[in-house]
Image (cartoon, rainbow, N blue to C red; front, side, top):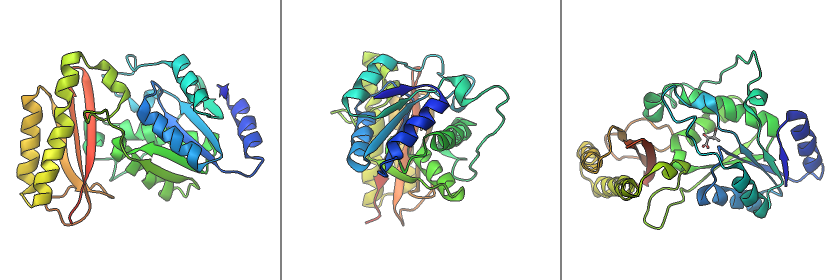
Amino acid sequence: MQTLRDLPALRAAVDALKSDGKPLTLVPTMGALHDGHMALVEEARRRGRHVVVSIFVNPRQFGPNEDLDAYPRREAKDAQMLAAAGVDILWIPPVNVMYPAGYATNISVSGISDGLDGAARPGHFDGVSTVVTKLFNQVRPDVAIFGEKDYQQLAVIRRFVADLDLSVEIIGMPTQRAEDGLALSSRNAYLSEEERKAALALPRALGEAKRQIEKGEPVEGALAKAIATLAAHGFDPVDYVSLCDAATLAPMTVLDRPARLLGAARLGKTRLIDNIAVDPA
Ligand code: PAF
């Protein structure tokens, strides 16, 4: 595995890889890799002959009072895991390579970025859209793979890839969970032992709301119950528990088409998100 930190070296290495005409798959990450990331890498290995993984803790997607400085960084361990998984290139650009002095461009997706995490974390999806566009231009992948845990992020990326005519296929992979059901996330490392137990209330509350809604109970009541359950387990604030159209993320009050139930809430200093499919059939 080549570990690269400057653009000319990346471009030359990508050209060399692509010279055999085989497809190249990118897995963008912010590092602190866990089994969820490694499942994306495995899928990339299965689909594409060549695999590039990027690690970049993107300052533009963190708000002023968020956890940019505290975000876990474990480059040596990440590199070991990726090399063992057969990754061809690890792309780790420093901040001044990604955003050199004078950098002034922003990619902003309206509509689908506005609600849910877009409302709770103003500017977050501009930061994600900008860095992912740059990663696509730097690595020039044929395929890019993202986890469905960040469901809105995946929908925003699909939107700008279509809108900007980018020639990259976007693949979403199901959320990987711990045995007890908690969605894997680099931020789970912040949880104390007690918080880790309480955190299970998030997937359980979403699961219970899904069951109620699929049984035909009123959506509003099921969402309110889920919010109350989270509050009772110490989540504060609960940013949202919302039923949305699975493709557009428009809020839904009646289950009349494929939907997604999404939740985000803070437990101590850790903000957790999760989502599940809700099936009208
Ligand atoms: O999901 C993430 O890890 C990040 O938001 C991403 C897509 C790598 C962009 O920084």
